[in-house]
Length: 333
Ligand SMILES: [Zn+2]
Ligand SMILES: [Zn+2]
Image (cartoon, rainbow, N blue to C red; front, side):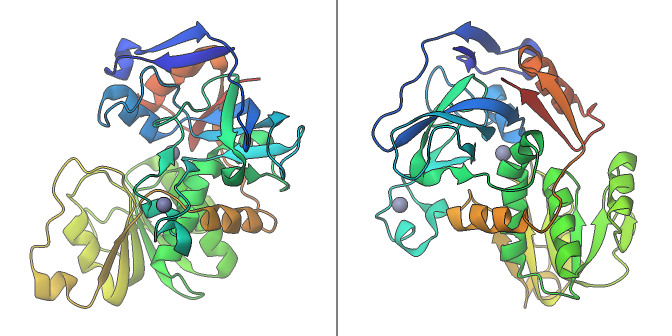
């Protein structure tokens, strides 16, 4: 099969990925093989390619927003020909206290797609049957791909923030996860306040009927929020976020890395009586909840579709901030 492999990490402009021909992978008992149709590009792929996260295998095939058709099944539930998705959660131990209570995102032996094992920037990918998402939902293949990461993360943010109808939710930063969160909030009837500098993202937020759009680096939200979801991979807006939160409110931190410290300057004023939670990997229950919602909510997203051969150009475009779409995906087969 053709696959993009990463052997040595470096800046994406140095083109660290190589397109190679390697033998097709074969599933073991309990596994399936997916013929990949589309795979979304995630910031995490850039973090791994560029060395912000260490390599866990060498070479590795990145990509964890995978949609395809099962072409070989050695499982019991999933059949050949089924449309399935594969997320960042490749597998977990199934026996630790976290796995036994449905919180496998904290499993110390968690295995992540496109980092610990090969992912979807290839014609085929192997998956554990128990961890794939059956995609029997009314959504096109190319729209299912980003649902597998930002979509599921959006639902996890929504769960962690305990959003209720009528709540005021603040979003600091705006990307595909924020986009899906707005769709969920609109569905349940919560009001969303969006802080972003990007004109394009402000337009998208307006189309999604945001209650308020601005930039809280310059001006606070017009009200205190019941919950705030924080996306910047840096701490500069952290205190500002806390100050815009009600007592009893929940701040959910969504970045997977922070380039600068998140400092509580004034415990009594800013933090006392407020909760801080973080997004850490994903759970199967969250994947299933998001798929259930996809039967009621239209999760199609504005995206740029690149050919398989253009993966690295697409990643460079994402890195440079020149992608004037919500997300980028590659068409594999
Ligand atoms: Zn991702
Ligand atoms: Zn476990």
